[in-house]
Amino acid sequence: MGGAVILGSSSTVAAAASSAPSSTTPASLRVRVISVTGTVGVYVPGLASHGPQLERIVFTLRGAPSGSPVVCKIGMFHLGKQVGETIVGVGAATRKFAVVNVTGHNFVGKPSDAHMQCRIRTAVTVPNVVGQSVKSSRDPPMRKLSSLWLFAAVDHQPSTAPVGTVIAQFPPSGSHEESGGGVNLTVSFWPPRSP
Image (cartoon, rainbow, N blue to C red; front, side, top):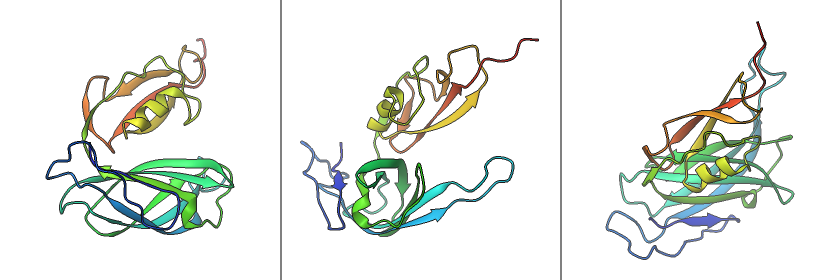
């Protein structure tokens, strides 16, 4: 596994190397958050009363070998409480940005509000989360996917299963996916109407 960096401030921080770094895995990746800015996403009439609340994070990343795919996990905090999280793949440029959906209202943030971890992408095995309950990003299936650096995209469908139950996933469990990749979850949201 590659080196990683955890960031809770605007200063540059490097993580310890893995036990056996390879020539393609850097001993450390260095990330620096430059700014955190509140913004509003695109308003889609009929789907929402307003655009989603977002935070735009501008950051720099150094230490990745040229051409190596990198993935970053970003947690957004406001007044000491986590209000959003995302996983993004980043390219070769040193200055980058990401957008994180946040619960509640967006805010004028500071670099220490964005907690980041970055590493070289690796292959992971997709776990089985079908049949498990997903009502928030902190439920066990979402934490399991996040711990493997997989992004979960949730689609709600009518079902006879209890509300909030994962009724399907793609790719299926046992598949191989790169960290930073996505897993589509179909989650029940109410029983279908009887004819």
